[in-house]
Amino acid sequence: MTSMLRRLFGGFMLCLPIVAMAQFPNGPVRLNVGFPPGTGPDIVARTLSQHMGPLLGESVVVENKVGAGGQIAAQTVARSPADGQTLLLGEVGSISISPATYRNLNYNPSRDFAPISEVVRADFVLVVPADSPYKDLAAFVDGAKKASDRVNFATFGAGTPGHFGAELFAREAGMKIEAIHYRSTGDAVSGLVSGAVQAAFVTTALAVPQVQGGKMRALAITGAQRSPALANVPTFAERGLPAINFGAWFALFAPAGTPDAVLDRLQKDSAAALRQPAAVRSLGEAGFVVVGSDRQTLQTLLTTEAKRWSDVVKATGFRAD
Image 1: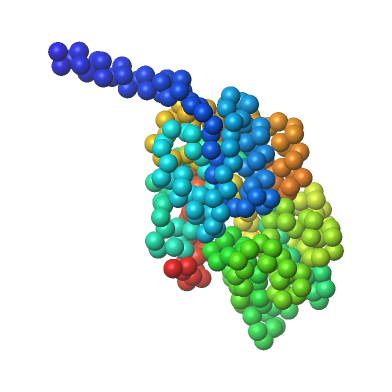
Image 2: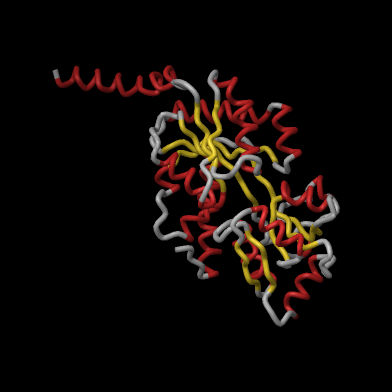
């Protein structure tokens, strides 16, 4: 009798992934993003949802859970059922930087999420006001080293990639900076354009229209290659600072415990959605590079990024709480 029960139980467990697939998706899939409508992350989420929905056979509804640098959206998904119906468009700040900057974070990225796929990434651009006296990176670094005061860097909030990217830059270049934390992207951009602050790291998506519109000057880009949209802007590596190679990445996550069969389906359909020409075009125009990685590649990225940003945060001694 015991042997029979074991065989029945074993057969039941083997059938679980098949049952999960048969029931998934069961209604609209909700994609949580931690930033307001019209921002870069929102554009990524809506482009993905538009092209992924038909592949899943259900609508993918974007829900903007704004606040705390993406932490509210992350917390929402961490506490959701592990059935694949609630997803997170996570990013480097809330997933890889926040655990090192907040002692009482309400979620644990390595424990609470199942990685699905890196969706897109974008490089950062060092920008200064259009009327800045610094015409290139060398002049900026030289001026910063000679300045009697610290160079003011605008950020889109404490603990964001732009904040710690500036700290990393200062460490590698041998200069001192003062981070000026703004509450919103718009305020930070206004501060930079007006000259209230001297520099900032912004994504290529934000930099391109500002530079082309003559409101900012771009000095260097963090990517391994120059951006086609900013072809005259050198990389940091070209100017002798190869360690300044951080970027903004956005990835798809489900709650931990979501069945592998469901995760595989989500990875397959999200990657296929991103390969569609219309998606590639719209995301490229917004300054993003499409990735669509497999689950293991994303896990490797997360492991690397967690250590990297933890080291940067420890070196600065910064704590957000």
